[in-house]
Length: 51
Image (spheres, one colour):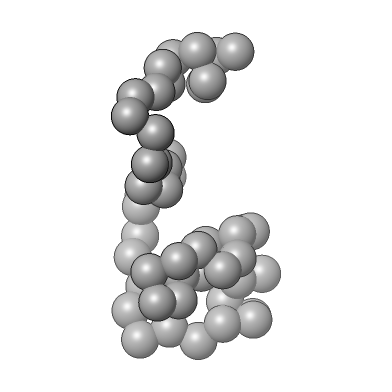
């Protein structure tokens, strides 16, 4: 994903994002799932992921 000014501006495969965006810093999540910051007071992740 590409993030600019703290907001997600694009998602996609690594090679697609790297072709379109330059970065001062690259973070490697090592295959882990990344969730954006949620504003909702609560969430039932199991239901969302397995739903």
